[in-house]
Amino acid sequence: MTNTLGVILAGGLATRMGGGDKGRLALGDTTLLQHVVDRLVPQVDDLALNANGDAARFADLGLPVLPDSIEGFPGPLAGVLAGMDWAASQGAETILTAAADTPFFPIDLMSRLKEAGKDGSGLALAATKDASGKIWRQPTFGLWPVELRDDLRNALNNGLRKVVLWTDQHQAAQAVFSGKGIDPFFNVNTPEDLKVAQLINESSV
Image (cartoon, rainbow, N blue to C red; front, side, top):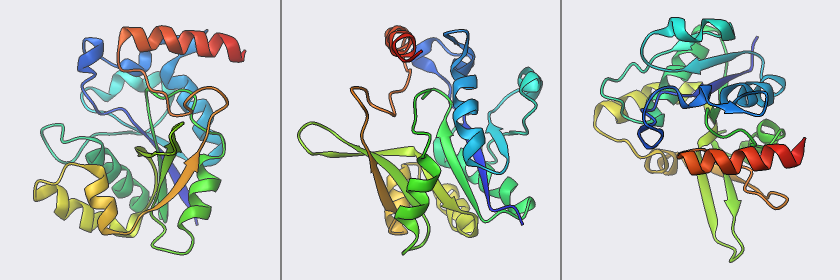
């Protein structure tokens, strides 16, 4: 039985980048999205992409493309639900999600989230701690039990959009990560962010 499937969340509108598929932007000798794929593949049993619009534009990746089942671009929870439904059809128990614009996330994301959630519902989110000690949750990076998909569907249909409001209802655990000089969940929202990502990538090669 397949245990954990990966889902890359790329269903947003990328308005701060001028629209389009942000994950297709170049980073080093490849793309933002390919960096995410390369980091996620070793951590899961299979992988899919949550994206809306014409799925054929991602044909080169060779991944299943999962559109939101809730209309109106309601945010990352809709992508999580699409991933859960796909995973249920594959007989999987959990999904691991990662954002398509976050190319440096931890290579031990899966193991750390699984450890964090083992004594509760199994639901766990990544988090980081800043210099002041404040914890910042990273709600697009999580381990999600497929058995919660109908509860999530109902919440979305009732208008809930904020990830942490739903995860708090299910006592989500946290795995707190720290980076070596950079935020491991640094994401590319603007052209300026992409320049920073290029510098980070060059320094790590």
